[in-house]
Image (cartoon, rainbow, N blue to C red; front, side):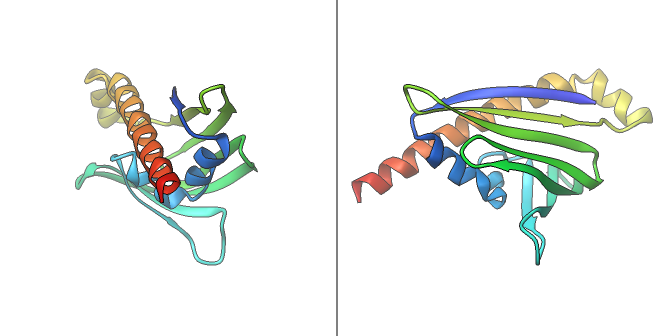
Length: 150
């Protein structure tokens, strides 16, 4: 299992940061590798994810929210498709909120997995996650500032 944790400091309250994350259908707005997240009808806890660079490098899975602690934690795990789990943690700071995103997933087996390891997929994914959290930081800080000036 490959696991990555990245953090960003956001100049918004923990409540504002949590509120944007709690609707997981928002995730593709700041993580370009996540192509789509759809909450499954009849449940708030199950969602369908599409992830990757695009066809043919695209994978899907169904995920379940395993824990929600308002303004503190959202945790999930896959229930079908690509084995993965993760959590978003929210910590109040003097500046606003520190967001820690932890993701873990299983690389494919065989030739595909060996190829991904050889090209340094872990370093590439880590860099993409850092970039994605900085994109999130910019997005939420702009949205909150815009709302405060209306």
